Length: 147
Image 1: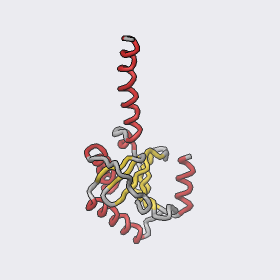
Image 2: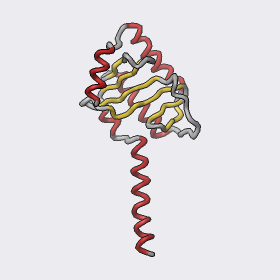
Image 3: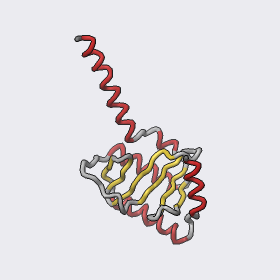
Image 4: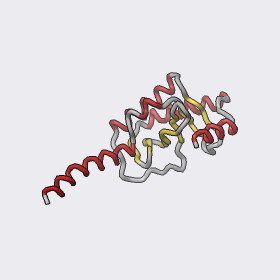
């Protein structure tokens, strides 16, 4: 009986830690080299990489996930902005959903500053208006390389 109790005490913390890694791994965000901000039809995207807005978006996501409270209520993702955070070899690391007041990663929603999300949306929309979107063909190639 004591061996069983000891085994349970050793296994349970490991299982809990493994489950928490499923939601977000703070070291993985550092591997993100490209962010694809998909349009509502998901047939075009704005690419963020290496510049100030790229770093601001990454830092915002990291800060929210590490410091914000989570919500138990489901967040409606139908009108969410979808960001694909990609590794250097174009593998998807995270899919992040921006909605008013929340970001969602792997089904877990975190409260976020609506004003900051609105600011990022305005920046993204201004880039769309300028014609910075990648064409659907280029986006499909990125998805194919993602596997």
